[in-house]
Amino acid sequence: MQCPYCSYPDSAVLESRVVPDTCTIRRRRQCGKCEKRFTTYERVEGVDLAVIKKNGEHEPFDREKIKKGLMKATWKRPISMDDVEALIEEVERKLRLRDSKEIKSWEIGKMVMNRLRKVDPVSYLLFASVYRDFQTIEDFEQEIRKLKLEVGEARLQAKLQQSGSVKGES
Image 1 (cartoon, rainbow, N blue to C red):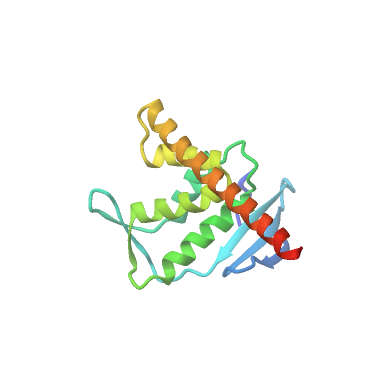
Image 2: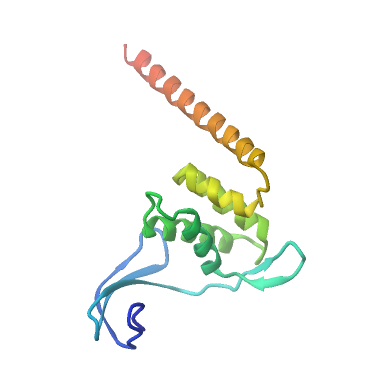
């Protein structure tokens, strides 16, 4: 495995463990030259998925494209690389469970956005602004209004459940 810091072609595996609920192995490595540590993920390649783009073209599914978009959206946000990897794993697993191995790009984007919305609303907004091609401030304002409504509804539901459980205990 090539070191991401100095490009030395040899590294030692310090620790390996299976990532829960996935077919992925997380390996902690150390470069044989500069001795810096880094993490790699190893997973079983499944059936090849094809993505149908907006213009009708087909291309192979590339989880790295999702990762790049998520890295931009979560930059300087309180989201770990493990959280990003888990989100990608969940989306990929759901896609591979489908009957069809051809997926429209908008379906993938929607799956990512739905999961990201639950993890971090600000990152969701950043991702959505690129994915949905926001052009104006009004586009952002409209999406923020939707998020505020969802958060308000979720808080109301939590209060109702909490008051219901308190009343049931009396």
